Length: 176
Image (cartoon, rainbow, N blue to C red; front, side, top):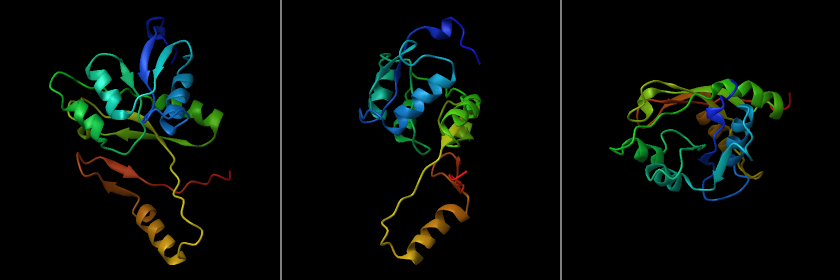
């Protein structure tokens, strides 16, 4: 997808929780922006805001969009979606996964955020999920570690507490 001249206008984008530069959300946002053919330094204005701060900035019309990397549903986004004067739209970004994987390795997978996840969503959002790593202390009991792995990966999908969205867990081979 090549951005139109209108899409290249300068937009304020909240790209980070807790104002931590180099965080997973910031890295993800910059990679999506780059994969979309935009220049993160010229085509968007980055604000380092937490998720709740980003939601408030969006409500106050101080920013036009924000990125977040978190489980579903996310409380701050639920708050935004239930605000009477706001209608949210989650933008499909799945088309950038291949470009991101080609440049950064197989870290991203196609995912769907079901329309029932947040109030006001008119359709499923085609998104990108990020691989997560579970790290434990080397001294953890092997039986406990195997039990955790079984709980997290063997079931593969679990319904979310709200909205019926599904989280999927996959074993990733990062050595390839």
